[in-house]
Amino acid sequence: RILCVQDSERTTSCSLSPSVKMVKVLGMLLAASYPTRPALGFVLAAAGRSFASVRRGFKTSIAVEGEEGTESYKQFFVNPSGEKVSPWHDIPMQPLDAPAFVFNMVTEIPKYGTAKMEVDTKAAKNPIVQDTKKGKLRFYHGPIFWNYGCIPQTWENPNEEHPELKCFGDNDPIDVVEIGTAALEPGSVTQVKALGVLAMIDDGELDWKVIAIAKGDPLYLDLNDVDDLEKLCPGVVSGIREWFRWYKTPDDKPLNAFGFDEACLDKTKAKDVILETHDAWKALHSGDIENSGKLWTKEDDDTAE
Image (cartoon, rainbow, N blue to C red; front, side, top):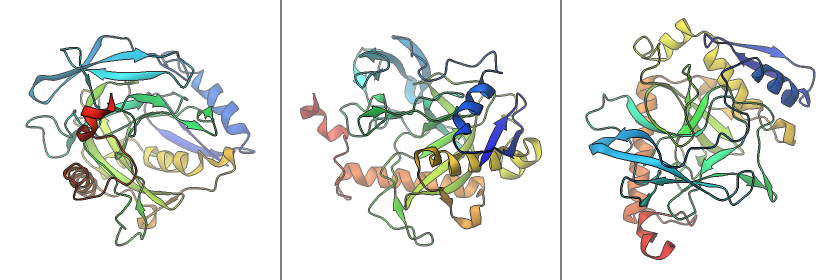
């Protein structure tokens, strides 16, 4: 089994561990070596805290409902007027006048977190909730070593087959793995620069993983493409690939695969993929693509609550 570890300088090394059962234990021990890490599992978002200014002065704060550690727990996004908004549909894909490769990222899981939090695409206003499986709250079997989230106003179309990979989208917003130094707040909206993208294939579905760096990170100006990442942060790309390849195996799931000979495609391809998923999201809203997955969209706003 492969275990990937990222140190304080964002250099990731991979080594063989004795068994899949050790992943959880070793991951937690490794996470304990970081004194500034957030608590594993939940990192409670502060109600009413303003996280980010987005396009046209769009600001959000997080309002928590329900009890932590239960299925009732929800992180809702609220605008300055106190109205609930959707992190998927209301927050723009890109900040106003942003460079071509800069996008907004909604953080679902902070660096070193273990609770599998995600934007609920089927619930009204799309709060962040903890995923469940067979009636139980879902946790990773060890910490994730990067910030994890999604780009709003994108959608991986499950009705469209990729012409080369011959698989369909996973029916979710496109995922982002942010490799910076800081652990981002759950529910925060952060400007990130796309550096590359991995074409992960999970249970036969295409699940793109955009690799990005947060604006303001010490390496933000130095990292502009995959080649820079491999030069300045050797091992990070392979660490991400192996983490996502193996992370479901403790649940007796098969290894995840990667298209394009497992290559991390460059920033231009990453941008193209993001824009393609944005076009799919727009088609979902216009009705050009049937909403067969019962996803909540703003068109449902009058009846959802």
